[in-house]
Length: 326
Image 1 (cartoon, rainbow, N blue to C red):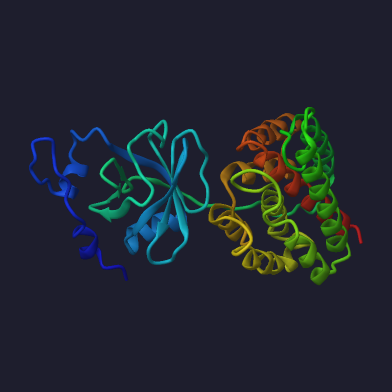
Image 2 (image 1 turned 90 degrees about the horizontal axis):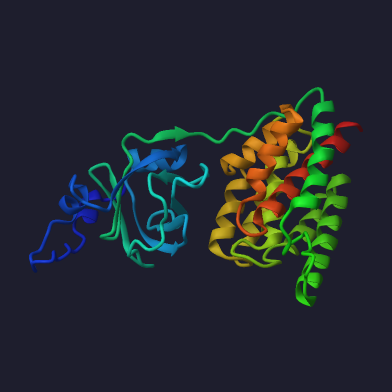
């Protein structure tokens, strides 16, 4: 159990008049311009905040997110702006942006009086946050809607997906061309072995994807995140093999960055961001228009990340369809 008294012992800031101000009083004041509230939060994160407390440091800062490394679990947790969807280990705060707020990497993060304090510049009340639970849909017994939607989705990913990863840009340079070639070659090898349920060989090809490609979350990692989601659909042919995802993810720690590794760690147990869950549901149960709307939301993730995630999910669903007919 975290020692909540130690969190309160953080050095107090100095106000403009040179007087020392109690940290929790400054952040919790109604007049504090840095105060905000959590609109919603991942069930795991909210439970930790409400039952076990929290202490950590700011790991990284982006326009829409602040990543925090927990002192106790060493996992990453995220405070996101309201422009983002729900995601594992994430609370969505009522703020427009996380950048330009005076936050700094290494700033202390503590929970006190129902507020998550990020340095002296942001306080997020978590007491009234709506709890979000990630729940992937079950694989259908009648797969014709999935088959039809999936064919349309694959075409849409190819035509509207953003280049830079598995999809090559129209004006791609030599490095991007070679990266796309390697990504597509290795994903094809991986999918071939999974289709034959040769899990050891599939593992060796999956490892060759980790860390491959550009971006904060490399394209190979993003593809695996989507694939892991497809393998974790309850009642799907690949569901009994889902523990393979954890083996792959466990090997990723030394092969890619912490942010990407955390996304794969959660996806390996079927925990992915809300837009990916919505896309999976729309592919299985939705109309064509509904599916395309959900797909568009995923394609908008990051630079090429959404395209690579969507492709990984689609290819995993194609595998499930093939295996279900055997």
